Length: 260
Length: 330
Image (cartoon, rainbow over the protein chains, first blue to last red):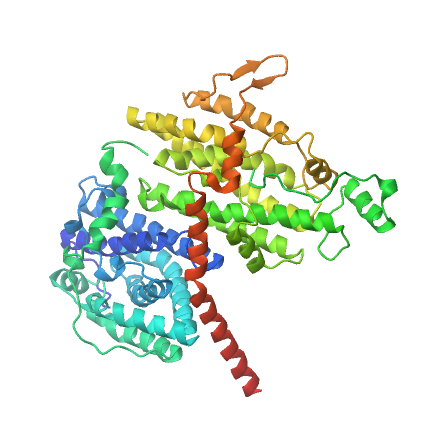
């Protein structure tokens, strides 16, 4: 990533969009992961998943808090999380995929963590200090998430015949949702040009390496690169997001103006 | 109280003179306030009672994730969501310490799960009630964790070392849980009228089940007297219930709420509240499996276990392969 200093005229609305993208990923994945609470296949997994969800919700507070600040219209992280409709959400489609069985949840986590890890690693060097600061803090958490999800993908891939089958199925099912992480648009180009974020395409090589390495250890087969779904980053989601939001936002919508 | 009506197998408590020398030595150590540790000799009844009590306590923590987990996805702010996640995670952690404490007595976690799933082992009656609104989450922290603390603080002095030590950490976390529950309710009663109504409704539903957590009066119970002689139990159910009511009623008044008990009255003479009798028929029904959520709670746990079998088997298979590889490499 370029190390150019922050241009004073960097487009604040582009910055706002980026912060929604990264904040919404954390929010929606945190929501999905927290759905497991009390239902995981082992007590240690319940604890680890709650921990991951807790990290992601904490990250949401940081990213959406900064988004509100950058927007300058007085919206808080809570306002952004609870009072936007689906078309205003900017998360990638991968994180809103339903949990499925535990294997699918872990595979989704691994595919996301590998990318999230690289993104935050690059953002630690962002020319926008507030972004670099958040990246510094959250990178530690996400390094741990990647360690954990990678380890479990390997052990289950190279486990029993059934665990292997389930993990391969999860991988095949989620693969078409991975391409969206690496597609840039004019917002990315503007921010990457200013040294604020890495160009999405630039993370692809590192991600391919992390994934190929883990898949080879896990004895799983990387699916062929075919059609990739996208749309989340510009507000065009799957039907699942509406249901997530109707749960997530229920109290704020049912009792407007109430303080909790 | 997360352990209710724990049986001791005894029919009466024996005096020191009636005991064999090693049992007498054991009882004298307990009487002197010394801790009993896993590898030491202990009466069979003591061991069995502890396994029943600690596993019931652990199961309560695990099943207790469900009613609160029910609102994680609907928590009203990011902060409340984070607090609730942290709380439920603590509870899973409590379950883990407690299962480990019970394992020191010679039972495995899988065996304890089996007893829970088959209905042989119980968990606290309180978790068979539904969480219907967000105020229920506050009420659980305030009332349920408040009642649990009443029982768990003395358990830090329990004669069995691993249980007592697990309880020290658990009590610290429980007191945070109680405060966050009260804090959530305080915010709501200061809010719009609909929020205050929600809190009153939650108190109406959770008050009596919370009093039932202590179990029926046990002054005449041989199990209770034996557990007290072993210092597994320190106070009678009625003592703890009275303490809970005395502590909680002023808090309800502070919140501007009405406790749903027409017989509740301050008794100057005893320096505590007089209060009505919980509906013990309801309690015994819940214990017998007829509470509003018994079937759902148990099925959720069984399903989590059954659905996760492939995951656990997969990890075991991987561990066996790795072990075989490292043997082959030697």
